[in-house]
Amino acid sequence: MSGHSTKEQAAAPTMTPAWVVNPVGPLRGDVAVRGSKNAVTKHLVAALLGLTPSTISNCPDIGDVDITANMLRALGCEVELRNGVATVDSSSLSNSRVPVRFSGMNRIPILMVGPLLHRVGEAFVPLVGGDDIGSRPIDFHVEALTRMGAEITLTEEGMEAKATRLRGAHIELPYPSVGATETVLLTACLAEGRTVLDNAATEPEVIELALFLQRMGARIELRPDRRIMIEGVSELSGAAHHLKGDRIEAFSFLVAGLITGGEVRVHGCSQERLVTAISTLSGMGARFEITDSSVSAWAETLTPAAVETDTHPGFMTDWQSPMVALLTQCDGLSVMYETVYENRFTYVPALKQMGAQIELYNNPLGSIQSRFVGSATPCSAIVRGGQPLHGTNVVVPDIRGGFAYVLAAAAADGATTITGTHHLDRGYNQPIENFASLGLDIRRIEVPIDGDAA
Ligand code: EPU
Image (cartoon, rainbow, N blue to C red):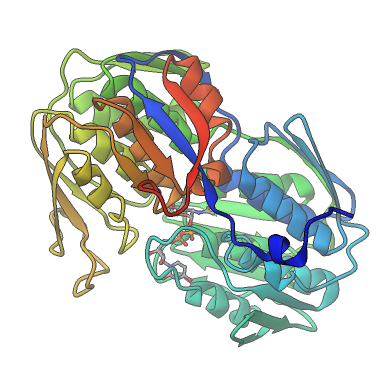
């Protein structure tokens, strides 16, 4: 018995978690990144396809791993997470329905449809969630699954799917979507016959998943020009993989050094995953020391830049908000043009509140043809850099925007209180510890929900 009355139990919480950041000047030191958020969860899903257990190591300690592990447990799988190693045994799979309580938590349930159809012939997954950075439709997934023989019904709660037999198909994606490519990979490797996927995403995390599936016994060929060919096999076994480093986190910590006039050395993410980030920052005057195991960056002065986000190997959309935070501190006019998502500047008002001069435009200010012409949301930002930033109270709109606030707060005058930090805990491995190891004064606190910072 807890001793609390029903009335007390029902009372709405009055406090919310927050991070408070006190700038200390240049951030210096070493940070080690773990496996990437956008690969680990897909590997956990792939383990659903194996007849024997899979082991995934170098897992980040993030909310998304716990959410995905709990979804697999709800399906009857045995999942153990210990010291960054996940072991998934799906031989005890007993349920084809991901419970609706997982609705809106992340983007992963839709990736489970293909594996569940292979294992049990039917699936229910709740509607996808993830960051609010655009409409994030699932039409490419639905079309691909349908072409492979699934009967899909969309309901208010999610997606119902059935298939007596899945077969290979020729699928051409209208845009090289990461998630839709992963849906095809996860579905085609046990489908009957050959799947040819054109206009596939080639992000490193997608290739990492394809290689893991190959380890499990899948027959996958990576062809030039965004073509992937998959020859279905009758069964897959479990496999082991040590995840490669998170390139979004790595870039963000390099920026933490640059934006404060310091120097951060990032371990655990290879140069290969950071090529475009390094070349973009080099073009602005950043200097690098690159070894087989680390990348560090520093600069005497940084010049403004015109950057456009793109699919791999372009400048990734998830690097956009840390980059804009950095551009606010580079003297002169910079341009950022977002081409992947139609609503990825929701963090800008808070940076402006901190003193940044940024204007948003609906016109494409770059060379890539925008898919969002006519959209009501802005796709371009012009940043007048060099204005001082001041600490204030800000609310995180999405995971990457939230990290940009921490970067801006580290370069500001005075303290910043950041609420909505659950977004950050979902995707960054031990962020407070990592920032503190660079010298930043950053702490977790609780603030009143209706207070200034809520
Ligand atoms: N799209 C459609 N229809 C679909 C699928 C995608 O129109 O059925 C559109 C999207 O709306 C978007 C574009 O295609 O405009 C690209 O979306 P994509 O499918 O590539 O994104 P995703 O798989 O949902 C992953 C990452 C994102 C990352 C993007 C692009 C995960 C869990 N998420 O999302 O990461 O930005 O690829 O690289 O892997 C993040 O980590 O903060 C994050 C948002």
